[in-house]
Image (cartoon, rainbow, N blue to C red; front, side, top):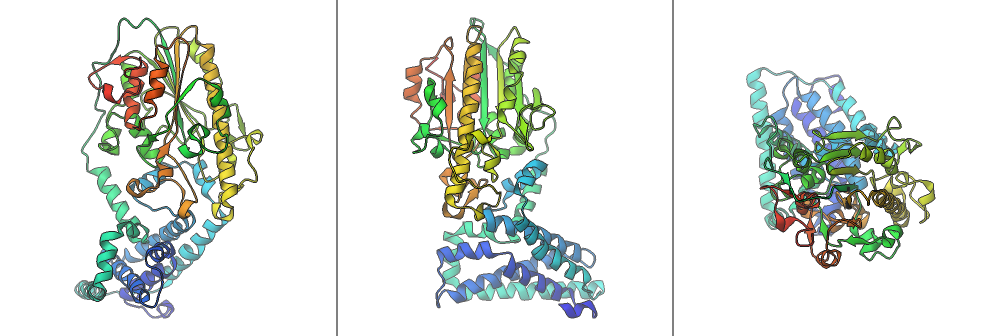
Length: 533
């Protein structure tokens, strides 16, 4: 393609060159997963090579269809830049870029982005993105009249499609198995799958002709014979997996302080999603995982709106990215910066800071029930070592970089477990605050993580994998309840009930159960407390 610097080339030449580059240099994650299923042998080698040929041909068709005389270069440069970053994250964390991941990216704040930034990421961007983009920018493309251009496009697409057909038929048995038995492999094709996901995301975003907010629970009322005020603190955890919580049998003591409290542990709790952008709005919505749609949920009231309608005072304090739209219509306080959070060090604001001034808020509301949501930074990765003060670094050595592939499994797990130790401490402080208010309220705490986390098992890191094929570590989450002395609940009955399997679907209705809200939107069979109050 370098000869095109001086002499104009047909657009087909540039497209083929870019497609070949992308297959060879940005699809190592795809071929790694292919080789895990089809080990490289003399008999399998031609079939594996054929995958590269088909992937290249598909890209040629795609770029030819979307590219025109003036749009081709911007299109190819954009794809090269994006593909370099996608290649980095797939190779480093083994993630896939589906519609949920795109939503995560769009909702990620600058602090979260900086946690992921590394020298290796910059090198990927420069070598696989910027350098080939400069080459594409400098090449000269031969202009063709409209008719000739259309014929040239038709010829290119026809040849590419013919290649696909010939290759697939030549290895028909292989492709029958590949397409039917190993569909998740296509999630790793770069750039085809993320381009498909972008199209899907855009389509989903504009497919709902909705405006305003759809009210729910308009008949919501608190029972008139409820003579006690409730003070309930809901703690939304971040990226904590259930099997690293000692309450669930983990060999390490990661929850020593909760162990001393009269808590009720739920060992079999499953999340609504594998990422915050899905799980948090889903768990506060009335839809449940199977019926959840992010756009419909965005235009529908959630459980906090229902509580507010009953006269309950609702406060959301956030030390994470934000509430993902859940707290738009209730009192919201941002604790991610030193301007509000008095417990920040080296650019990291601690979850404990959300408790400062909370007693004053409670005292300022002498009437009515109070529900407070504390959204933790918790175990947000990959920089787990930043999520806790030095005093909680019990397990060493720890991984002190966001480049998890540079650390041993032991170092990653040590940092992760230390962050859980800090959450244990934070929850004990929440319980301590509630105990102070026992004389005036029926007090309770409900801690529930939004999703789990992969720590390198089978090469997977972080979270956000497509739910259908996500590992258990990303979906099995810890859940803990604590009740004050005056809270009317049969603890023994609830402890027996806690051994059953639960999902985030129960969260909405259990919150209404905490505050004893009567409403047509309430479903007692999904209320964990039902039968124990």
